[in-house]
Amino acid sequence: MAEDTVSLRNQGTDTGEIGFDGTNVTYGGVAIGTVSSGAAGADLSISFNAAATSAAVDALIQNLTYANSSDTPTSSRDLFLNVRDALGDSFVETSFARIDGAANPFDSVYVVSNSTPSFVDLDGDGDLDLVVGDYGGTLHSFENTTPHGA
Amino acid sequence: MTAPTLTDLNDVTFAENTVNASPQLIDVDVDFADAEGDFDGAACA
Image 1 (tube, each protein chain N blue to C red):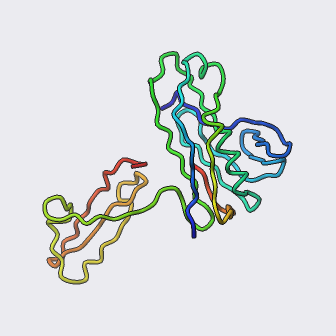
Image 2: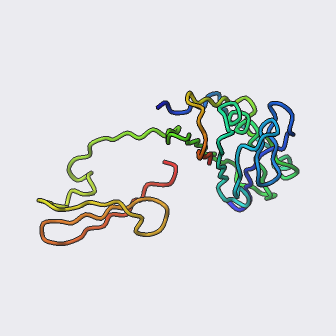
Image 3: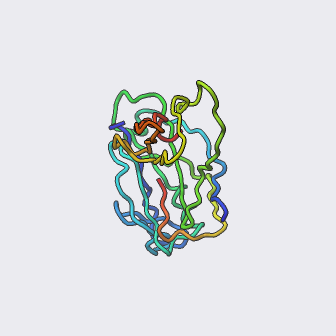
């Protein structure tokens, strides 16, 4: 929400300290990444460089801050935090479960061959929707309605 | 490849006037670890 600001504390540049000038982040005085946004309800995003270590990211997360500009703030917030390392691993693990019958959103799609299902962001909301063809030559589209972060 | 881990993340409560006055640290005891320790091009969001 516009009243929320997630940011970083500027500890300093001594050993083990996180430094933050509003854009650049340092750990022990060495630049480890850059920060974008986080103010007025926008998501905070930090991009790391090769100097970032596990200890540096640990210190960075411990220096995350929250501020609220409203005199009548919404009473509670959920903070979603994820870190993706250079190999693409993150906290969010992907798992799959089979859905049959009416619970299957693709139950009405009958394909024989060359259906060529593809995931694309059809509505530009930042998640992937599905387009799949059927044996009659019709293209079906399915909007991904899962809330972000779920 | 090993996924990074985050432990000891706890709920926190702030008074309205406190978060109005200045930013507050969310959790200084949370622990992050990553076995590979390779963050070149990585991200936190």
